[in-house]
Image (cartoon, rainbow, N blue to C red; front, side):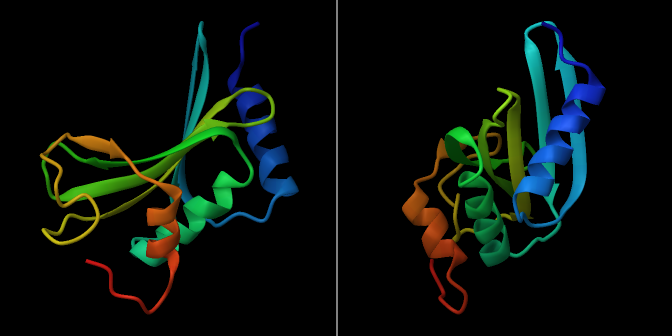
Length: 132
């Protein structure tokens, strides 16, 4: 069965109506013969809010993983969760933040990525704590 852009938009609208989720500033929809994908960027660039927002999405998706990716230029990171909506549509939600030599993803080379544990996301979502 082919998924259309309208199908993706309907599924996303339903999901956003059913759950209280943080604001996003961009949505990218992709349809192809093997499936469909929705990619959304959170509307914040601060690590605690990004981690908190991603944790909110974790509770609404199935088959969820978290990852940090250092962009090829090396100057920023994408912290993300990927999973599926109830319709089986692949979703990635991410936040972008500046790369620092002492923060999350500090050990990544440009274009490198690694899986992030839920504990790391929970630690980063705690306001007021400085975590190096």
